[in-house]
Length: 281
Image (tube, rainbow, N blue to C red; front, top):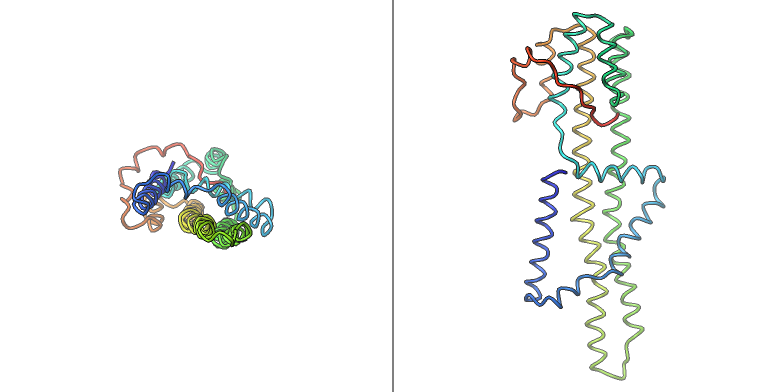
């Protein structure tokens, strides 16, 4: 689990609860007024329904994976792949095509790096490798960005359906008022208005506290994956030229954020860790 995401949601919910309790002067009976199942069902149910209408079923299913990725632990795969590309380049220079083929088979869950090494093994030209892998990166980025757009659309729809729920509540409230009893009328107006506004409350809450932050989180994960795929592509091109291990590290370190610790030269004498597949390209 991503600790930062969990902490963010936890702190946000705590602040929200404390704020409501302060507003109602710690009268817990009043606090329970903010829990309304009908309002929750209207906002979430209609948001999900509209999403299914607007997008293909398979795309909506993929959004579930996007939500899971948002809560998954952050990965620093870039450093790992820089080290692995340098190690593979050294192995290819020493062992030739047979050694490269054996190392490519270790990446059974990462088809992108496996394809890159396979193209090197089959002696594709540098132009062909760059063209094919660049197209793959672009297509994967577009596919994943589509998931972000769906979540952003859900963020936009939630407040609108909150207003819809408010209108439903107002219709029900107004139809049940008794104009012959002034006191009862005022009580009904106050209580009914409060209930009706809860759907707007839920709509704004889910939009700004859940869907929008998740969309931003997933977008950042996509950026990280694109960087990782570029490292693999550039690494494959360097491997093709049998570039020395140290030079591979230096050329690929440009993809590391400035604040990250650089890959030390002492890594040259170490065996690269077993490859762990990044997200399937």
